Length: 264
Ligand SMILES: NC(=O)c1ccc[n+]([C@@H]2O[C@H](COP(=O)([O-])OP(=O)(O)OC[C@H]3O[C@@H](n4cnc5c(N)ncnc54)[C@H](O)[C@@H]3O)[C@@H](O)[C@H]2O)c1
Image (tube, rainbow, N blue to C red; front, side, top):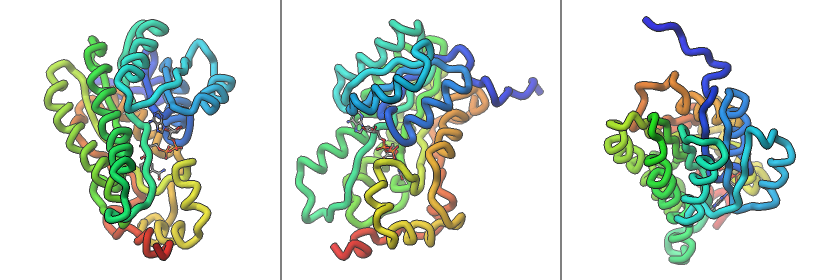
């Protein structure tokens, strides 16, 4: 047996890129990566939020870039910033995601396409552009969702995109394993972030999630960041091609009927 990997500075010397890093799960993960010794480049489409994050964190440890996670040239630029500023790339966290409730029969094709572009094409682009720079091996993590395995009313585009992510990481793990690159997805349940702030304004939705979660509550983004840091670190050195649910056990129960609760 080798010595146990320390859990405090697990990412010492590593360089990471994160999409959707200015808020919620992405921001908590950026802070966690830095706390564990990494240098991080975050991109986001929200320039004002990025500027607020940059004010708060050491510029020697964090770089920011405004960009769209579904735009190939923006994604390529994010990877270039990591190489130019910090000289290497070890970790890529494809995290940007969007979604809103809409019945299939009411869903505009542009809205469907936009969700698929950000949630599924975005991770494909980051894997495509990050992997060739991971010359010393690496770890790629993609944010899927509980909805990769559990359907919800009004969530056709979101659920389909997240189920697609679960398969994308399997194919990427197959193709990149020989280069020492691990690829995994995470599947959070209900987490309080700006994405879900609208849902938190409706008590019946919050109760619906809590009732259908064995642990009886929602998650804080820091709890999700802990799993991403583990997957990014050598502690998960034999974990690849997986979807790691982090949902308080919600996958064992049923998804709340959001459209039913909203009377839509
Ligand atoms: N909050 C939850 O309950 C929950 C549950 C499961 C999965 N997720 C997933 O977690 C990920 C992060 O979401 P969050 O809850 O932290 O939300 P959030 O809204 O707090 O953060 C998402 C960030 O991504 C950015 N973003 C959105 N679209 C972008 C784009 N096209 N290009 C660049 N940046 C973009 C937003 O500006 C925002 O800063 C998403 O993939 C989401 O689907 C969230």
